[in-house]
Length: 521
Ligand SMILES: *[C@@H]1O[C@H](CO)[C@@H](O)[C@H](O)[C@H]1NC(C)=O
Ligand SMILES: *[C@@H]1O[C@H](CO)[C@@H](O)[C@H](O)[C@H]1NC(C)=O
Ligand SMILES: *[C@@H]1O[C@H](CO)[C@@H](O)[C@H](O)[C@H]1NC(C)=O
Ligand SMILES: *[C@@H]1O[C@H](CO)[C@@H](O)[C@H](O)[C@H]1NC(C)=O
Ligand SMILES: *[C@@H]1O[C@H](CO)[C@@H](O)[C@H](O)[C@H]1NC(C)=O
Ligand SMILES: *[C@@H]1O[C@H](CO)[C@@H](O)[C@H](O)[C@H]1NC(C)=O
Image 1 (cartoon, protein in one colour):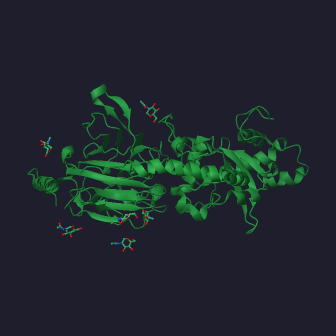
Image 2 (cartoon, rainbow, N blue to C red):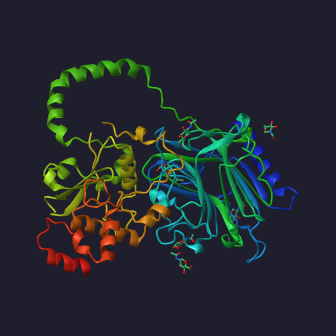
Image 3 (cartoon, protein in one colour):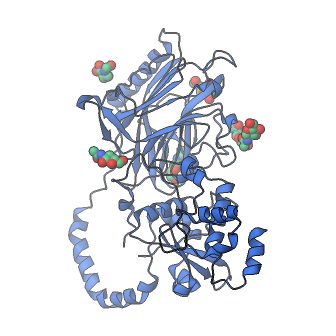
């Protein structure tokens, strides 16, 4: 053991001892590195020899949890008021890409350390489809989330949220901080910047005030928190509960690190002394060897020249079906269709197979040659940045989200132009805008107000679709149709109330009586 390393270890143990024995009477600790801390770890979580806690290392679909080993008393009696508490921690997220990561790492207070039934991806190894939003979870979390999950109304793919029993945050904000050194101006931060950052979580048991602040490691705790919520946790937390962290990587090679962590009941969290934290490893690409630098271009040029003609021929021949496979896609292999199969299934995307143009692309009807399976093929344009985001979130959740009212996603395909992951991180979007997936005219009104999809909103979509066919009119008035209300639904409803429903039926439909009977029944 190197002397310096030994000293560091000694200091961190000393810190721990000091923290645990401090005379205030209220429970507290401060970890600078995690050597000798006896945390309860599961999944991919591990403490490295230098003291860094690696929650998940560089591989897709990993999960990891780390908990303080014993439960803490959050309420003085089973029905008592939840006590104030404070936590601070220093973390870093390192993705293989500089502008895309997945998924995130929440700080949690939970009655259990057992998360074996939790799902990965958007469920952050915390909850699952059945228990999300259930009051029996008794779960409080502060999520650091690097994916925009529209099922949970995430604001963007780089946000901090306060959550109670549910992955849909009570409050959330794009990542950043109010800079006290600069008149409190808001500065953007990126969770997966590969830089260590500190988070402070404060709960006031008297008022129910929850404040979460975040800042670069060298910046002191900002006066103005990033996200706040008012929620009395007495109805949430169990008398005894565990504190810890969860972490998932899903479709992207991401690493989630914890460098330090402090906690106290009834007081401000002990400050973390940055200079005592273990150092993050270096992540830059390995510089290539000199031999390679000289030999590689020459070899490449030679090979390129001699193979040039053959390559050109092959490229021309395969252009029609061309596609690329990237690292992050490997796990979705079985779900990926070849462009050739989709091309044939839709007879080359012929317009007579076009079912409609919806949202961010065209939808074609197709039949697979071998299995005779009937499918709808949605074609998303490379130009549609929003469409691509949706596309990735859909692929990343293949097989994990099922809704019997929605068409099941069988798989995906992509073709050619660099997948453009770098373009997906949307620097220009409005942080306040939420994103409701759907096409105007089919969205149930309450979905627009509440953002909450349900069986009923699915029924509404289907109804809007039926009206479109029966009336031969577009669902939203674009001045080309026969009605002057904003929405087709309103026009039909007016006629229904006036008893003149027949007038709404498309004149081009021949067998009016049959249709009328069906519509009334
Ligand atoms: C975490 O996952 C990586 C990559 O698969 C593996 O090398 C490592 O051994 C795992 N660590 C633990 C503690 O499971
Ligand atoms: C470590 O924590 C476990 C509980 O997870 C406990 O049983 C054990 O005694 C602890 N060991 C030490 C050395 O504190
Ligand atoms: C965790 O929970 C699962 C499912 O509820 C159970 O099967 C398993 O035994 C539990 N593990 C531990 C260590 O308690
Ligand atoms: C949801 O909560 C109810 C009680 O409110 C409980 O009976 C049920 O088991 C919970 N469901 C899940 C999946 O946790
Ligand atoms: C932080 O730790 C360093 C090295 O152990 C020490 O010199 C310094 O005084 C500490 N700072 C604070 C604020 O405690
Ligand atoms: C911060 O990010 C938001 C999008 O989240 C963007 O609108 C704004 O221009 C950014 N500000 C700076 C200073 O980069």
